[in-house]
Image (tube, rainbow, N blue to C red; front, top):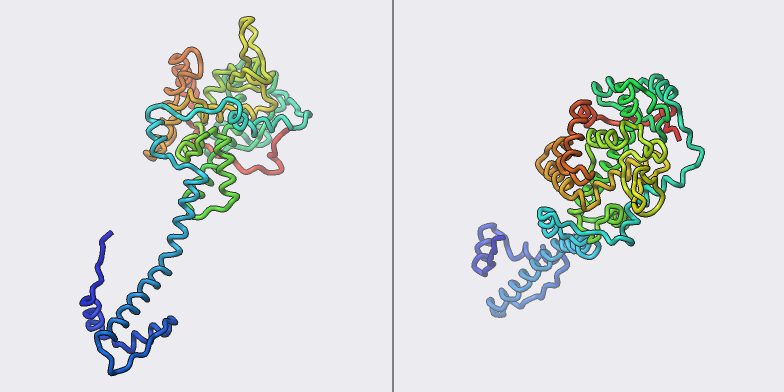
Length: 386
């Protein structure tokens, strides 16, 4: 900022150049309710000019203060938003991300918030109906829900099923079985991505405002808990609150369930083979007696998809995945599932072989065709089947 000095000679020159008379200045000061002291004509001119000069400078200072005070007020409010309510450690945490050192969760206090919205699915009525494979196929036909059409038009019918059909494991035609599995889980995956996209947009809108309401601050607080951001850092929240490529999610679900035929998928709605050491779950049949882990069990398929996305977006094992995804965002590129799979070697014990398997599933089944697909609005004819 350039510093400008105000001298007496400059003021005189300005008044002379602009032909501003003393009477005009007096009118201006009176109009703005400044008290003027009347001077006798026989007083010293220098003293008179000194009083005028002090009055003129005082008026300029007062006008300036009133002019910038709203800006100062807003700046203080904004500073309070990021200093008292949310600690803005963006630079520090960016360094931590690059060094692969994200803040960790407190095991008991914070982890419970990660699955609050997922556990809410347990409160659904117990009258969930498991439709047969034949019924589901007819439902898809009656609503014109076809994968060829989706690949072409990028629009998905919002048919939301809660359970896989038991008969899916009896479908001998591999192509038909794969298509049915994709048709069932595709709307669920896109729906969760859509929810994240809306939350992400809301976050950016809040951060771009100079003034936020109490409700908006409360919303961000809830998202800090939901995404396990223990230090209330906005950059970390931004990196975690992001989508999982549809093709990647389908590939992992296919791998973990054998395209929907596994016991965990059919008995526990577990599409992604997530482990748990507490709570309800299914113990692998071939597990050793001293094994304590179980595969997480869900009431409906949607809960499994939400838990999977929350897992990738919060667990410390996938911080490099989130970092790579953030780099794609920052460079204005689309989320590349083939690239991002490289960072999921810790998802399974087979490591790099698991990554190769995912990439093979994506390529052979042209799953990237679904990455830019959108979910059509729900209607009476296409309401969720619960």
